[in-house]
Length: 351
Image 1 (cartoon, helix red, strand yellow):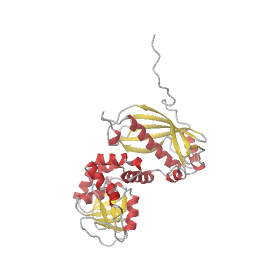
Image 2 (cartoon, one colour):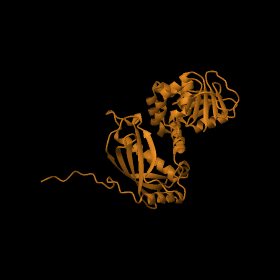
Image 3 (cartoon, one colour):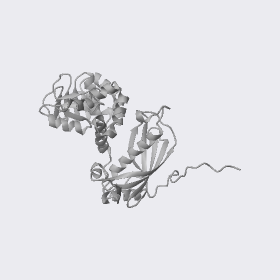
Image 4 (cartoon, helix red, strand yellow):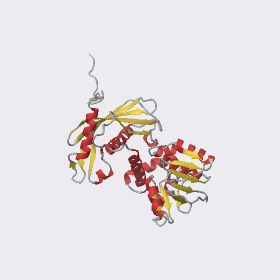
């Protein structure tokens, strides 16, 4: 297992330890007070999004192992030479709350390696020579705008995501590397897909909740969209596929709202492929409560494959088409959900 060691006793040490733990590492701290603080910060890191395997159970109070990925010396502490990277207050400067804010300034002789490392865990490392305003947008600016409130900070970053700038680009990067790390291995010829697929799980985000105190209607579709994203990665429609000019667009959606759900409650999706042809995918998402398993909503969708450069539909490329065909075959025996093909209308008047 990859291990990060955090030395120090301050709140910053706890925030760094939380960031590394949320990135899926085994984390060793040398002070039980730091471990207690990590437990307090963990729900906030969970709301930002955890990498696969991330767990509080992987936090240990003890001495550094002989081999580790990184030793981070906070509060002026030092470390013996190690086979891994060493970060110090001189070479790595994060903006509090470090476990949520993406910006980190890196320097020193290991700057290139540290940049690669922090990029890999979804942060936005920049050298001190980077334009000050852009660094401010990734750190102090976010804190000033939100007063450092965790839910507001996360909501602002996600609201900025469509802009592709500053914290919006940073949160998109965090999501991309996290989802890529958490996605099941892409389908390969000979694989037998799960029936139905279970590819996406998340807590209800604060910005998904309305003035009634529960998940608002548009957020059900947002969550279903992330379930579709997980499907896309499984069939091979990833960043490289889209960069080459191909993607799936949704052309029709039918949602049935079954039950409300509150902020931070866990939700999980099943995905069933109902049909596939040369250009289209007919699918069905079921959204369930992550604890009691109750059905929350269903989303039936028709997707069309698009050549984004030409601006029109086109045949699904062979590798993705093969994956979809295999899933459709694996799902052929599943019963058709009762919500499929329903028509919205008032009942006929009674005479």
